[in-house]
Image 1 (cartoon, rainbow, N blue to C red):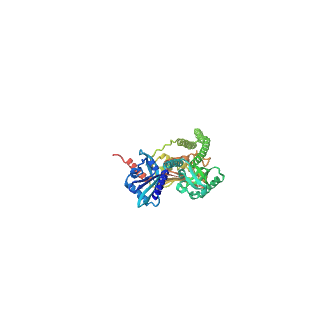
Image 2 (cartoon, rainbow, N blue to C red):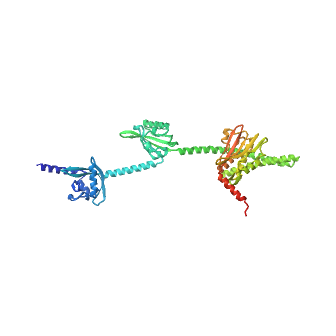
Image 3 (cartoon, rainbow, N blue to C red):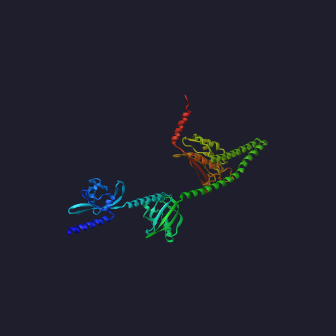
Length: 507
């Protein structure tokens, strides 16, 4: 009776196991099949005489007894059921799908067996792969769009849930630092965080999209200017989210400011050029009239003294007219980019003595031109004429505004440059005028002859030399114009050797 009852229960359990959708397999520790249900037979293509198979004949990743023994040991050491995934193949040995297997050991009558319950998760795995691929594609798109994207959780103190690479690049704040934190915790300037929080609260309370232009301090210390759009996204079963998109317009703002500044400078240059051209007729006519007028008077001069005086006036105005024309021609070359520089060996002491001899008699009465003692002989490879042009312009400029005292010229040797200077005891320059003194067409005194181009030309020449020019001045006490030229001692030694070779007579 008990055997019949046991047999009936066994038949009932087998019938039940045949109806489940899982694949069920029981194997002895030697690998012999002890039980398979119908689902297992169907999936793996076994015939009804399944007892003839061993686990090594099945496409379930156990090709050898060693592999099976290793798996049994892993199952034995597992405190609970042992779960893993395997591939399975069809009758043609082609990949068919995935099984998630739960395995455990069962002991009966002193003998152990291994039971495997496999659930087909092929569709689930395909869905997971598709979802993973879609997420990967979405992340790739979000991380490569040229804007900053972010998501905040209104139910968790507006902590960041998402922060794309565009925001990382713009703010220099890593995603790992931003996600899970608030604006107060990640932005270096608290005022920026407070501004962002006010905007978030406005979006949350009104439910309306917010568009704003704002600036903030990035982690690297730069100020970024952005146009930001924030919107509220309702979520089912949880607090809504705030999503935001920011477009960095810092460079556009800088370009706009540069364009505004360029327009202002162009308008100012145009105004100065217009004033220059309007004044040019007077500047040219004055010395030209003197030259023509006194040339006619020379023939009627009553005495040699008056004839010499007329000649001096003609020569003086001819020099003024020549300087005026030279400045205009240099300006035209500067604007056309055709001003030429011819580098030759220049001995600075000799050059300064030549400059002194040329200008010592051209200062105003009562003003002495002084050449300071030059340092040890220094040679440069530069354009001698352009260097003399700069010194000439600076001395002429000092002479116009110095009516008493002295004008001192010279140069000093510094670590990596030579500093030339022209120091006067003239009227000086106000701070306001000092900032614009090297601009084109700028004249400190409209009643003093000149084009207002001399200092501008000096600046351009010095910069072409690779140096800098500036002025120090105290109104009423005088001014010191100084400029630098790059200099290396090795260059001086090389030029000395070159000159020595040139001066040595050939055999």
